[in-house]
Image (tube, rainbow, N blue to C red; front, side, top):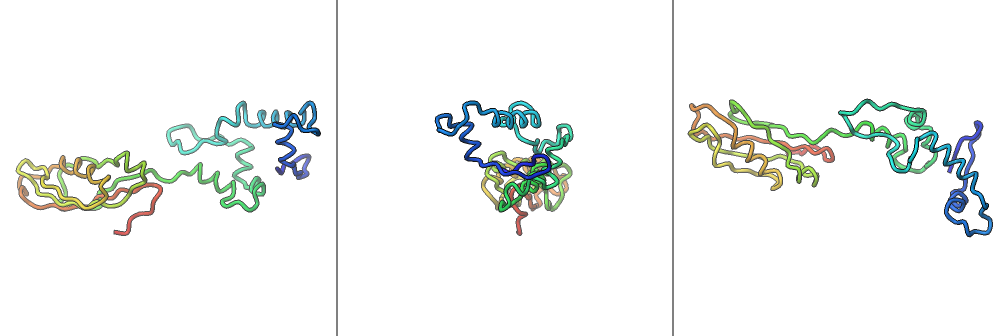
Length: 199
């Protein structure tokens, strides 16, 4: 472990630190692990009580208050800890930036609908599809029924996405003048962990 002490970088052997903490039967282990406890007390003072039970920084909560950056987070952001793991990819500072700037949430977009409905029910991202990181496009065709709602809905796309499209499109409303007309459209589901589909 690499630490700064009085402006000097010092290296602490983790096997000695671990022995002081966990192996009291070792012949060279001090009877009182005062140095180790002093280090842990400093960590508690810097991070607050129970640092091992809580994240070092909050992630992805757009509703909560803005993140207050203390000295530790400022050092992390400024890449001061990157040399702790010199061969690691990504660096600690990169991980921090990714955590405080989470990827966009999964989204559903009506790419096309011809003809356009006079009113449309939103298409919801199925929870199971979100958990499975399923994304893609669902293409559909339907016939406008006499009551102005689409019927005979035919779809092409992932099986986890089609029921959500059918549930929403069946509630869309069209004017009486196009009863019996064929309509078509494309709904795109974008998951934050995948690239946009090509087709």
